[in-house]
Length: 357
Ligand code: NAI
Ligand code: MG
Image (cartoon, rainbow, N blue to C red; front, side, top):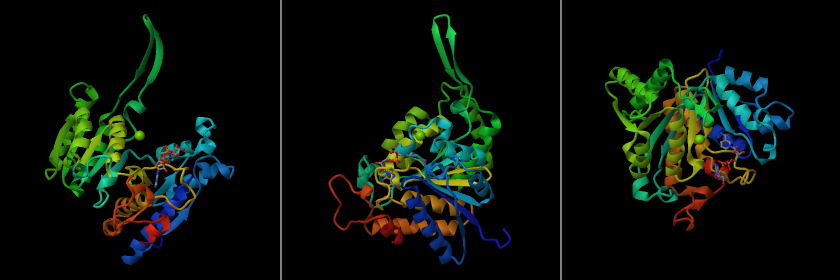
């Protein structure tokens, strides 16, 4: 940019998407201001919001603005209003196309248990306390992209899906996860099924081949089935988990439960031309427009954006510290209140009040 001010494109989307993106934008601006910097925010329609304007789910100007931006922050797309539409015309098609166009190959989902929220998790507080892990999921290869089909066999219909990776795809994901581990607690676990799958054996070979360049990172290997158990028994054992596409899809949803509410979780899709940051949750039509959505997932996605796309780790740390402090002080949205009602010292507030805090 001529004046050096980074540009962040905000794509609110549908339901609570615009509400939480507004909250995240306010926090990014506040963190930047505190450090004497500036961000230029732009906005564009995507998903159902674009459809309502008579536009396709990913309008051409929205895509152009995304490719020209330094980073993109997206709320959520979709809702019952558009459920009857055929696939390519649905709001979700806009998000899938955006991810494809940006070329993002690594989906990053941090799962962190903040002090004070232990009783919101379905697991015992002493199990989830202190959880702080990241699932790195390869996003553009494997079973979801390989050849698939049905044919008539001699004994009846036959069906197949193909789990395929080339070495370059594995290497870029492995390097990405090793770098991530280096910035955290320097521990990487490759999740695989190397006792059965040839693809998993190659993932192991490549991680083993690349690991010597990261002597400060402790690398270990774990079968996906035993990892699934260990995640709910001993989540503190993990720092960075590297997964091929399908294992990462399943384990990241399993890990998400640890944090208590889906409203707490951020995600980033990285490695392409422009980073795409989103809360993990959807458009939550059941609570949209009521000002009660938990903005923390989106706010933490904003912190990831500042760190990973702008290189402002200090600004990201500022937001993370604010989130921890607000929770420690007892401020909660409704989704963080356990079934038995709020504990003493806890105040239940709306999206705006929590964001202001
Ligand atoms: P959802 O994540 O929107 O909601 C699941 C439940 O969690 C609801 O009870 C909701 O009220 C609650 N919830 C979610 N986020 C919350 C927050 N920030 N604060 C408080 N409570 C929160 O998932 P659901 O209901 O399966 O999907 C709703 C719509 O969102 C669908 O159209 C779906 O396709 C779309 N969706 C979009 C995603 C995206 O844009 N990346 C991801 C997941 C779903
Ligand atoms: Mg999934």
